[in-house]
Image 1 (tube, one colour):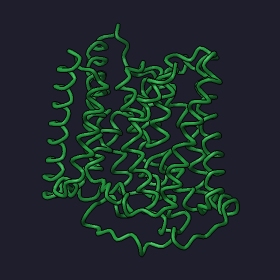
Image 2 (image 1 turned 180 degrees about the vertical axis):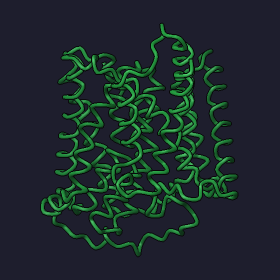
Image 3 (image 1 turned 60 degrees about the horizontal axis):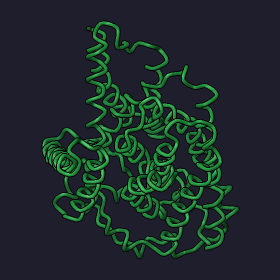
Image 4 (image 1 turned 90 degrees about the vertical axis):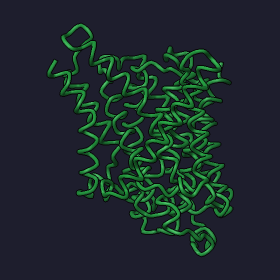
Length: 396
């Protein structure tokens, strides 16, 4: 029983340690908090320290873990969207719009074509896996987790997909950070001054924390004013969760997670247009905290024995999406003359989410594409869940 309680507490403590590490060490910032959370969860899984349902305290452990998983993402979604000033999209430049359209189209083509190529290989819940991959590659982990919950995807399947996604996507991130962006600068040599100019984009830092270079800024979270404002955001998230649950009960007679997630996402986007909500401090970071908790837990479900011939097809499917989406997006950007740096931040924003944009911008030493990358990522956050649901509905 003591081991069970300590392990449950560790699901909260590890994200705190990761956040503290992010504040102190540059290597943690470069690796990324979400990547580290998954790594911690996989280590827990590989060590086998989690009790089985048959062991003492095992039933309690699995029940509490499921409860935490079921509420972490619904609470995170509003918190991560509150600070997003979606009016920035109306100020974005034409090439940014083209890059966004090309990137999302490339992901959709890759997912749908990959589904028909790999669907005969017995991948469990394959239509839902395709939906989750659509979500994660148009907005990041938040959308993946939201779709997994909304579509009632098996926890083991989610863990396997996430494991392969992390193994295959992380090297691509490191490639760009280590100088791979220079390759794309040669393929896309068009240095469009309109794209690299920030004069046409006027953003007041106080209007949104997302507009700053440091998206995940955990410093000062527990200062009195910031903490109280953050608690207001958490309270509003709880209200949205209750409203989503109530609507689900009204429409379906049960806690339908699809209705809950879509309701929460829609209410959060609407709320973000109100300045008092948008200016609530540290809500994005609070949302990331819940995502890190979820990430540690879901990665801890990974079963190395489940990686067999059948599950390896999931890895091939994920790899196919990355390669095809990248190539198609690159060709599209070449056609419409999007420059290499904008392509790089677009790729990272869509495949990895906005928090990964600033490190890439820093590596490229070109902060002029920062806003474009963040805007693309925010739009991906906003529409990724909807796109995933549509994919799940239309695939046979």
